[in-house]
Length: 266
Image (cartoon, rainbow, N blue to C red; front, side, top):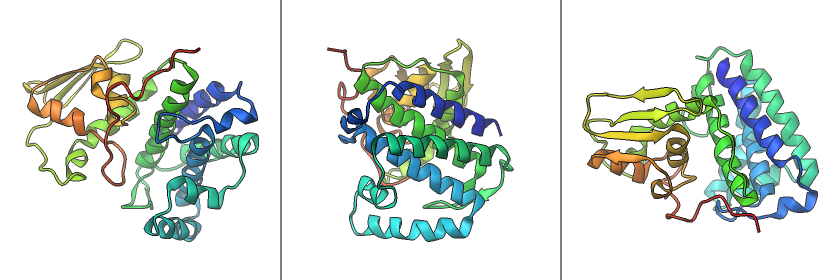
């Protein structure tokens, strides 16, 4: 499955980004909810592990999911829940994540893309599950890159995240209790390699245009649209970009303008 190979490449890109770090660096907070590098790597490892179980050991998935859901219901934060399962930190945690993402990639590369796998909410296809893992890796990797003052080199595998953003147009409104607009805006994007990517009704007067990776930043809420060069023509296009959310869970507010950015190295 190509999406599994793309997830592997995304994880390896993050691995390369953090390769120079020392153990003490993992305590560094980021612009994402003040999560540390360690919080982020543990979060990625926990849910990669759960995605692997969902595909290869469904009963074990349900067993391990139960205390996590109970923790959420009790008001625990995700970092607290994930620490309960994986207490290792620093370079030991890094090693667990490195081994884990390769295992889950290998499992999904052999899977039928249409195979249904369980998750916290509704089940999803194996293709959607591993695409979500790529999206999470890319989005959380942005927080680390921002803190390190590094502008990442983007790749056309980001198309999976763009498609996820397109497919969650309705969800972005439903999760907020808002009426879903009748017409989804047209999307005209330029890929990292310079290709033209277009989605939706291309005759629509509601249009979002710009760079594909900046669209991905907005739908993953790693940037406010004001901090990108995206152009939203039409009321619905602008409303979508203000409320875009390509991930599951409770409604989340995008960062305020200027809050999430690549830091200038001191």
